[in-house]
Image (cartoon, rainbow, N blue to C red; front, side):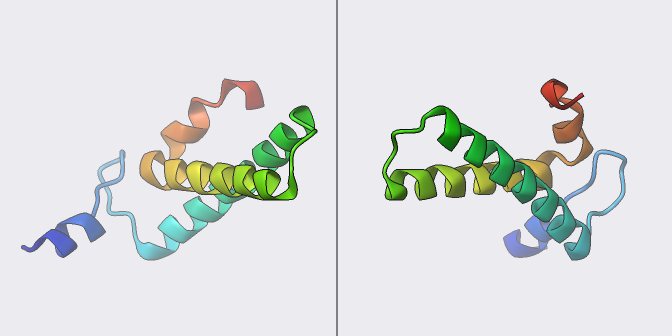
Length: 83
């Protein structure tokens, strides 16, 4: 088993394999949350340049998307401010 094979077959918290489609769905949902969070931060920190706003939104999208892929349902369960 090589390194590439080991990283592409990560185990889900429930003990089942996470396939490529589920990773894409998780990233997409996390990215949507990141878009909302990033735009909210831009409104809160209003006097920003266009570059700073774009970088902030992009950072929030990537961070939320990757966290949703990595931790799955645990990521969503720990977002208490959404409840």
